Each structure stands twice: as C-alpha cells, then as structure tokens.
Length: 65
Image 1 (tube, rainbow, N blue to C red):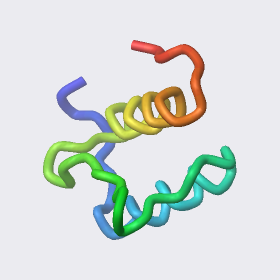
Image 2 (tube, one colour):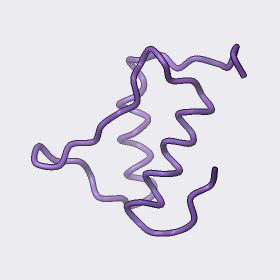
Image 3 (cartoon, rainbow, N blue to C red):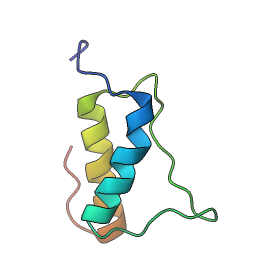
C-alpha cells in the first residue's frame, strides 16, 4: 500500500529494543549492532516484516513473506 501508515523515526529504536526484550532476543552490541530500516522508507507494514524476519534469523523459525 502506497499510503501505508508511517512510523515516527524517534520511536523506531524504542520499538526495536522492546521487541527484542519481549522475545528474549540477543540485544545488539557495539561489535554486532542492529541495522534498522531506513527511516525515510519504513512503513508500519514494512517495519512489522523487518521485526518478524529478525526474530526468525536470531531465534530460528519460519520467515513470513
């Protein structure tokens, strides 16, 4: 959807940190930082897909398309 809901860039890092904590995922470090999606291009749907993929990559499981 072209007119998908946008995410406030200031909230993105907080969302990721909370998501990692809730899913007991390894937290990013300075040696292995998390690369967040580009603020200018992220939408609610693309951000949800990013989180789903990261969870599957870090904890195993199915990656939904």
